[in-house]
Image (cartoon, rainbow, N blue to C red; front, side, top):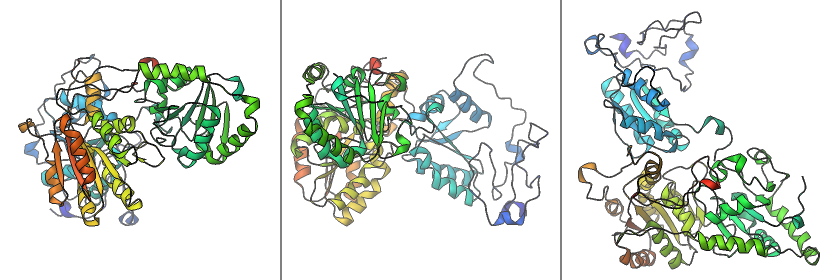
Length: 570
């Protein structure tokens, strides 16, 4: 059939005319309904739409394979309420979809929950979204049916781009479905004078924009005695082990950091963007406080939270100016926030960062504590994205800026290992440790070859719980522990660790070891640090552990969760 092998760029999808709301046919046509100009041969931009386009080089299903008499029976009554994700999955079922290649994430969890309720659709869980889209292409190329891939928002969606471009250029029928942040957060990069002498409960809220101003920030804290809460990006801008540090605030921040913001009457926001993972319910965030926002990016000021005082400028220069004023007026001001600091100290004693025990098993937080102790808090730490990322933010006490490397805003899994490579190249004499999870690590495991070839002394502390931990935690808390494609091991051999990360390291000539018992952990980490060159330590952790504290998405300080794990039913 000439039409089946033609490279003609004519459209194959019948589109409705402006006079009719219905397409002429639900199937693709071998010709265009409207004339095409020759210039279309030269320019064919990538377009993402809700229309299924069948390619020229794949023949349509043969007539005998289409059961025109078969009637689809919905498992829902006509008037039965259902979620949008269930409507989506049922739409796929109506189209005869039997297989999808889907990788779950926060914004696509509902879709995966709905997939577990389907009796006809099988999900093949890839280990990277790019693997998923390429697998969907292979499915389409070999079967003539559209390949279906599903990913979460942000980096999940962008990881599909290469596969989408490849499918377009080769005219392969492909449908890519992604999650998205709530509509109200789209476009926000989701996630009046106030004299300082008139306040009693001030808090410093510092972010990534303060990393170049750590010396000035430290002097400001010394002059004022104001406690410091940091964003995920801002860790290390003020020493986390200092008594005035409240450590991280936000969704998985300390109770005392979030308490301080909740009860503050002055919030000094330096180099931050009021991300939704920090603020939760925006209107309730620091609702009692006057807000002073200093940021070099004018687009960030007032974008999410309207400040009472705003300064568009370099935080470093602003701090230098304020420090000079404070130094000149120290005797006059006589700042004393001792009562406020004592109140926060009580909160620290009442709600310290802690973790559960699991017999001889290794709590992942404990592994990070030991690493912090043995490196004296001086290592450069990179991470992937997920539970291990939050534990690394909580339990490693960063002393200086730029010790903490993590994909904070985008949340791109697979970031940790290549980031550690860059850090090691830039800081050849530093201890560089990639604290990673098995889900994130395997996404760029190929970079072990780079580490070996370049002979970089990157250490990998792999917290391996055989699951997509953070998504699993949300399943435990909010989905009655229904597992929707978050187990990363081999279901046929659940008693074994799969994949064997030591063999990945061995294939690249990198020494590696596995530790499973708490009593053996310290020696194993010390051996990792003492071994010249790169090293991988596979730390087997219980998958039931949860990252706490936790303020649910869109919640407030009053919603904070401090207890429980995967052994509890919710």
